[in-house]
Length: 256
Ligand code: PGA
Image (cartoon, rainbow, N blue to C red; front, side, top):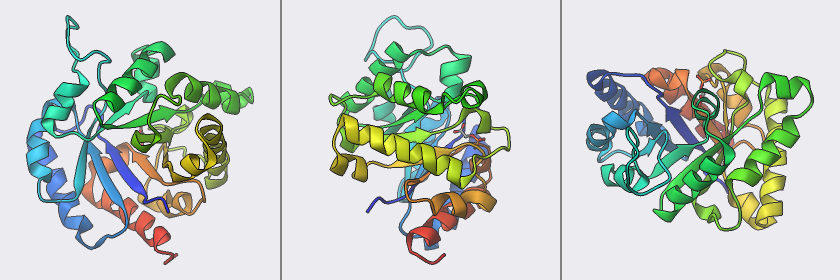
């Protein structure tokens, strides 16, 4: 049984007062929602105050990126131990914006994944194909390669969460159909079984990301290999984020 995880990637949004308001709205909204884990990933600058804001709630705190070294002359970067000190329990690694806008390549991402798990935190490792890849029928090849590059048996699976985010669906309003998403999620699970073993693959959560909204969350959550969502735009509005959680919760409890 995999508990669904609904994660909000705030990206570079929200001033501090707005961030506090958003967390208060989420905390209030989730009071009656059960069976779903909730994670928010605010900008690094807000992590300390957000740790205070989520204290006493079941909202977990994550970061959007980390440097692979613990310390050193890396201007502008933040290390995993520093993130851990804020109260973070999760770090997103390999988000498509990091891969494509900041040129983060496979070697670096593999090191970052290992830095996160070395510190005992959970890594949310993102994979996903571009539109060009999909149109050239390279989706499986790309996703399998990204998994091979980022993870391996030296990455403890009990610290690993995979997020499948087709690049063409991120921030575009174009969601993968539940069938398209399920097909790649099944592939990811098969790949996890090949890397680890079937039992481990069956325990590992695979989130879908890319224009998840209250209106499509239930259909996505109903797919057998979709174990939650990594939400961008819709996580910036408390009611929408809570509605996505409510949808995942009802699917998990068999109510729809
Ligand atoms: P989106 O972003 O929900 O705005 O498409 C998802 C993500 O980038 O994780």
